[in-house]
Image 1 (cartoon, rainbow, N blue to C red):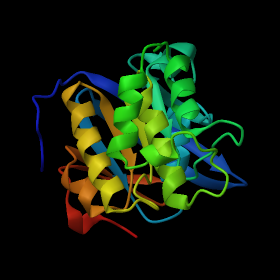
Image 2: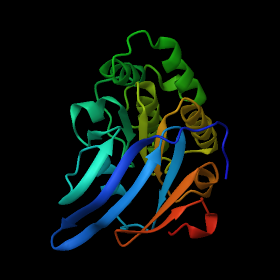
Image 3: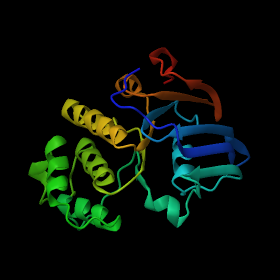
Length: 229
C-alpha cells in the first residue's frame, strides 16, 4: 500500500445503507462505507456491479431509494456538497464551441478560481495536450477527450474528487500524470474515490472497496488479486 503523506482520519464521504433500484432490479444493496480526508479509495468490481451508479449518487446525479450519503456532513446533491466536489465520468462530455483552454477556464471559474492560467497550463503540460489548447474538441480521440475531462476536474477547487474509470483511453503519459496528480491531491488532504479496474491505481490507494452485484463484499487494504473484471 502506497502512502506519501500523513492522512487525516476525519470522514469526507459517508455512505450509509444506500439502496438503488432500476426496473425492479437492485443496483445498490445497502451500501455503506467511509472515505477519509487525505486518502485515496478505489472502488472495484465487475462491469454492472454498481460502481458508476454509486459515483453518480455520491455527486448527486442519482437519488438513492433509501439510505444516506453525506459529504463533509452535507447531503449529496446539496449546494454545500457540490461546492466541495469535483468529478470526471467515464464518458467525457465536452462543449463543441469551447477550446480546450476555455473548458479548463470555465471549470476553474465555476468553483471561484479566477487567476488560474499558470495552473491550467501546468495541467495541459502534464497530460501532454498543450498543443490542443486553442483547439475545439471536434474530432478528438477518446484519450484526448479523457485528458481534457480530467484536466477540467483537476482545474477547479475541491475537497472531494470522484473519478469513474479515469484510465480508460489514457496513454502512458496520461496515466503517469494522473497518478502524480492524485498523490498531490492526497497530500493536500483531498478525499479521492476512484471506480477502476486498474492495478496501477489500486497500488497507490489507501483503501479498497469491492462491489459485487451491488453489495459491498470487501473493505480494507488494497489487494491486486481482488480486482474483478
